[in-house]
Image (cartoon, rainbow, N blue to C red; front, side):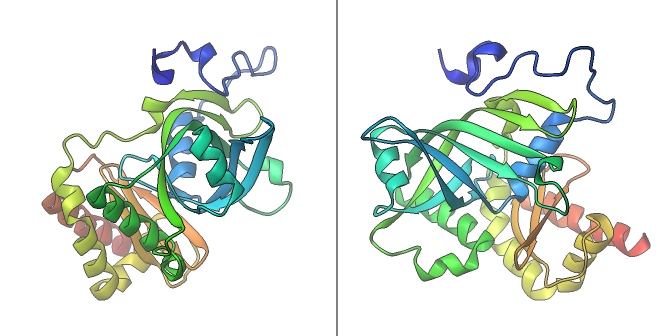
Length: 266
């Protein structure tokens, strides 16, 4: 039985009945939406691996991108301890935390659990490379070094802590995005992003400031998937969800025009 098919109480990282006694989740708490927001928008996280020599948990800092379906992408060095650990046992977790002022524990965080695998097939590696470097341009300095490789985390489950009475266990399939019918959109992504960043910077700025509520900055588009698109301005990120699921380049073109009109009007 795969992890994603296990009963919720048996999923990795699960905390059944984690809410305080008598507490009810707030009516506005949407754990799937919040979890996906953290997954797509967080640029770095704490990677937990199993030490290959002693079995101790080892935690290191890594940069994160996501594949079109939301599975985390890692670019890691073969000289690092976490890579050596993953080669022996791919089971791992990544803690993704929203930053902000005040108490760090007042902000939502997501622990994603699963099994990491290196991606060596040339076409798949090229796709992950493009996704990762669009999110982390400075990584181009070392992405093609011989000791670096791309890994994908096959998500089994996640645990969300969004604050008091805002905790949830999430099966892997609920966290990820269905891309079975999105081949046309995936094929169009790279050229669409380049076109938007080169020719429609004003629209991108409006998406970030008017629709995502972000402060002005050198915003650029970094990724597209059937559920939305990702933006970045230096170290800041933003995520906008489409009003409806899209699966083609033509649908992407139409929704971006519609969102730009909405931003200008609002």
